[in-house]
Image (cartoon, rainbow over all chains, first blue to last red):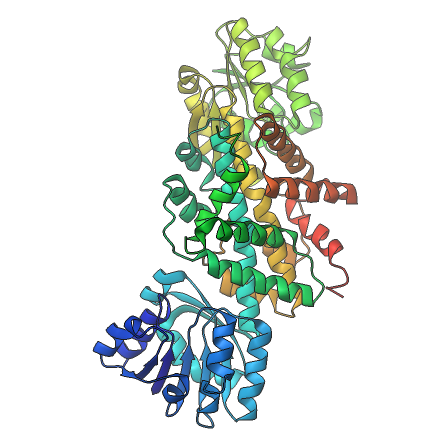
Amino acid sequence: MNITWIGTGVMGGPMAGHLMAAGHSLTIYTRTKAKAEALLEAGATWANGPAAAARNADVVCTMLGFPDDVRATVLGDAGVLSAMQPNALLIDFTTSSPSLAVEIHEAAAARNIQSLDAPVSGGDIGARNATLSIMVGGAPDAFDRAQPIFETLGKTVVHQGPAGCGQHTKMVNQTLIAAGMIAVCEGLLYARAVGLDPETVLKSVGGGAAASWSLTNYYPRMLKNDFAPGFYVEHFVKDMGLALDEARRCGLQLPGLAMAEQMYRKLAEMGHARAGTQALIKVLEDMNRAALR
Amino acid sequence: MNITWIGTGVMGGPMAGHLMAAGHSLTIYTRTKAKAEALLEAGATWANGPAAAARNADVVCTMLGFPDDVRATVLGDAGVLSAMQPNALLIDFTTSSPSLAVEIHEAAAARNIQSLDAPVSGGDIGARNATLSIMVGGAPDAFDRAQPIFETLGKTVVHQGPAGCGQHTKMVNQTLIAAGMIAVCEGLLYARAVGLDPETVLKSVGGGAAASWSLTNYYPRMLKNDFAPGFYVEHFVKDMGLALDEARRCGLQLPGLAMAEQMYRKLAEMGHARAGTQALIKVLEDMNRAALR
């Protein structure tokens, strides 16, 4: 297949690489050309902008940062929809707004183009190892058509419903993580404040009813003051904002998510927008300076 | 060993049974004698009250409901400490106040009695299968002495520090669960409100960064409106109250725990004190009636 890939950052880069390795012919565009070098050396073709990249593609894939990037890249005057062939397929892997996914779906349908929203979870490691969970919204026949691509990139591929449902499912994923991260920070701070050894505590609490992926993966990094990004604070802030927007739209109150979003915005304001999400501990430490001596 | 066991409810009953099966001679007291029938039929000796039960024991174990029960049973006029032999060992398995554990430790030491606080996690299933996590506070030699008992009852046995540290570790465990339960409820409600199929959503989100024991075990029960108790709401309310008391004592702010404790108190007020903790979904449903139609 002729596949166009737009956005070759920490997630998009390895994902595009897997498609090339699977034998597809790739055309690439990304904002910072240096980030595409490895793929270009491996034989991908460079294009000067989204429209130029999309012109001859069977499938156009986007993996960008923020909904505004998606809007400009897909719906803009020189966006991919302006140039794609009829009957081509558009797949947006960005975690973005469910409402924008519906808007794109309708704009694409008006030009006889199929589209899927297909956000992923699993982080940079999942992208590199092709073990992502891919949550897909769109028409069933478009989903079937995209299966070879999804199977090359991920381990858990589930069609969640019509356009927007992939994004909505990712919002559920982020909502589950949000208040759970507060819990991990609070457990660690309690342990410290009362004078327990936090590593020994983990031996008691890590394997039972308190167990979580966040506890296993982030609590030890918090202990070591290792705030290197697996997942950027600024992206999590975006995701939680999107989930809260959608919740507001349907009159839904999610106080745990709202609390987490406020704490993470505070964390970004403290200068940690490009830290990993485990840096949340800094907000709770800041709040509790006296108790921690 | 001559072991006295006080409190033969849903946790204490099977735990005492394991000790009998391991060949120990058991004396039993519990508030509601009917709950001790199976153990008495299996050969345990009944005693009329804590002091009578404790008189000839090498080790006295308590597994009760609330700190007030522990205080009365251990420190009361006719409590076990009033009757225990010097050099005997007291082990309290109840999840109770860390401060009370220290108080008991000191009262016991004044009579030349050793004591350990040893709350457990793993629920009724862990008690029946002897797979509990046992979190122990007290002197190292008392811990060594109790090892044969702990190994008969649990899978993960960790000495966490001096008196009170077992209880503190259990507080960390409950703090980790608390805000995490809010997250599970909110993820499910978001899925419902936007029209996703919650079972299909779990296929996408259950195995990655959003994974948790609570998600795996409680989300499906919430879906089926199965509120049978694995762990009682009223006991979780007690535990979170204890953790917040200790946090207040050291000037620690834990907003996620505080939010969960308020929601669970509301749940108890709604009449669900004896439901399982997964009934928290009822509080968030109540808050969101309009959005869920």
